[in-house]
Structure formats: structure tokens, C-alpha cells
Image (cartoon, rainbow, N blue to C red; front, side, top):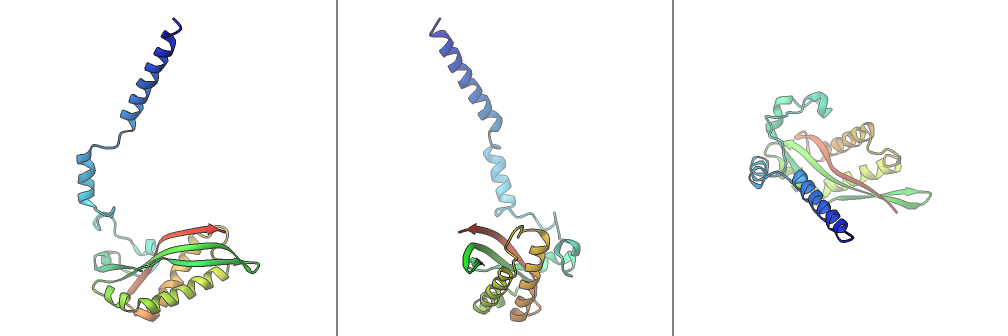
Length: 173
């Protein structure tokens, strides 16, 4: 009898584990591969969602999404957040520039100058307290993107329709 209870508990544990594994099992490999083939980078097809003017916050036409390309800046941007004369945090951002189709070469040709003005804009944003508190709230992010868009248009020209912040991370020191 003393050996029967541990064996029953062991069988119940194994049964529960098998049941949980079946319940939490990811979709079959065929379905997952079909999803990857349909959108290899996790992108949503343009027909599913074309951003409107209200969503993008600028005056690009909603049906003009197919006439846009994205130039991802090659390296991340690292911005120190200084408080009381010392570095209190570091903010790391990945930025992409949305341009008219066929003009990504202009962005990459001007990348050194573009990186310089982006960094200066990010430093100004940090010095004005833009990366403190709830730094990812909609107003702060909209203001930062707008400032980056203005300097990008100064360097690249009117082909720039938006600047996208792909990743943002704040690490307190």
C-alpha cells in the first residue's frame, strides 16, 4: 500500500504533463510553414491594412502605401540620459526611414549626415526630458518622430514621408 500511493501520484503527474503538452502544443508544422510562406518577415500584406492619414499622423494618402519603401538605418542609435551631471540611463533605438519607392538609395547615400542629425535630435530630446518617465507615451513618440522627420527631409528631401522608430529600449545605469 505504501508503494501504491507514490505510483498513483507519479501516473497522475505524467498524465497531467502529457495533457498540458497536448493542450499547449503549437500549430502543426504545415500550418506554420504556410504562415511563413505567406508573410516571411511577419509583415501584414498591404491589402490587409493600408494606414490612413489619421493613423500615420501625416498627410500621406492612404492608398499610397504600395509606393513606399523603408530604409532601415544600419546601426542602432545609443543616447545617454544625463541626470545631475551623470549618465543615469542609456536609450537604444532602431530607426527606419519611409521614402517614396525607388529612393532608398538617397537615404543610404546620405546616411552619415542623416545619422548625425538624428543623433543631435535624439540628444536634444533626451536633454529636454523626452526619455524620462513615461517616455513611450503617444505624445512623446509623436513629437520625436515629427522632429526626426523634419531633419530627415532637410537632408534627403521631400521623398521622406515618415521616420519610424522600430525598437526602443531604456536601460537604467
